[in-house]
Image (tube, rainbow, N blue to C red; front, side, top):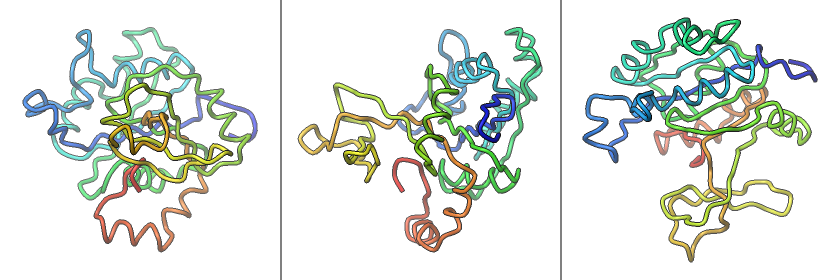
Length: 224
């Protein structure tokens, strides 16, 4: 995208691969991203917020039949969604089913390679509901010269969340997952929103990343 922000060229990757066992029985036969809130799938709120900011290209990185079925049956290519909300020009939704992905970060890796993405990517967890100015976020990411930017938010209760340990320059050292309050390194929680520079594709190929996937059989944002 060069130095000028062009929302129509930005790619949004939405990993949807978990089984959401903590929400059973609601997710026994329904994708977590497709659970209804105000009679709309959860992920529709994210798509609408981003589409109204001019973003037009979305990729669902789906794992599992239920996730793929529910999302494709409802959204298809994005045409009906665009008509429903009067989004012009229309959005375009692609699906990349992959039975081998090892988590949200691995889904981003697979899709960045498959579609040969050479501009910044906005990765959004499929069960997220949020409002954020993506233009300002991308500008912040560029100003910092970052490979990856993770959006954090202040919370009162740290239990049940991924809490960031950051240094004085706002660089994230690590995440502590679901800590008791006394062990929390901060009150800044992972929101499930990530900006990735295209150069991160090289990082995904490094020996250390392969070691993580070999040992943990997992590659998730906020964990690894």
